[in-house]
Image 1 (tube, rainbow, N blue to C red):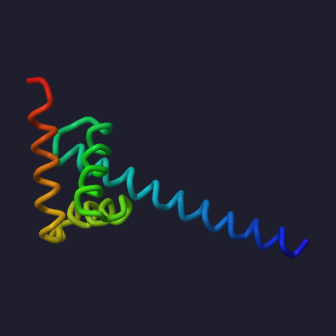
Image 2: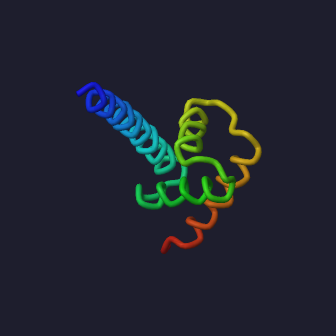
Length: 95
């Protein structure tokens, strides 16, 4: 019984963390849709590409984008990759 209770507590913590991470990613997508003037699906693609190209977790990239949306500077490596990803998606959108 105690093992089952501990398993459920661990699972609950993991679900709470996943929910919080999802909210951060969704908010960062919103920032990118405004800054990059793109649809949300492209915003997610940009986040994913930056994450892959910098070898940083998606949630970390999303947190940095949110801070940037509030006026903070992005680390140089993220700034460069973000500009490159936004440029790729701007070039691929129909005029």
